[in-house]
Length: 151
Image (cartoon, rainbow, N blue to C red; front, top):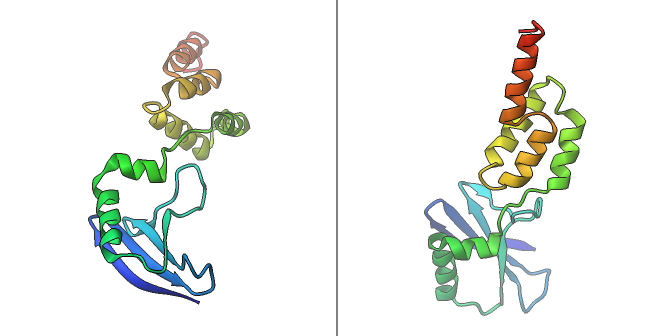
């Protein structure tokens, strides 16, 4: 059986302590973390919510200290949640499947890649260039189209 036994709110974060009597009796508590009213997920672990396990005799002071440090220390928070990484192989596969179509989804994907350029510049630049969506390719394509009277 599971039950919420404590809730702490700090800034845009909510921490929910849950007691699970059906699991390991030495570590029956799990602290689930939410951000902006939504579950906070580990970076690069699709669908796995950020949490911390506590022993049966955890201290309320330790819990509050953990929550405070998580909220106020970005480096500590990143050490727990992780950094979002782009899976270059997956990005290539997605690009291969529909980037040349004129669909709204393809356009949104290209915009998504362009938005990620500041984080993963080299990988994204390579993908966009290969599929003709980097600035140089777009300019070249426009000039070619104008020269052929397409525009």
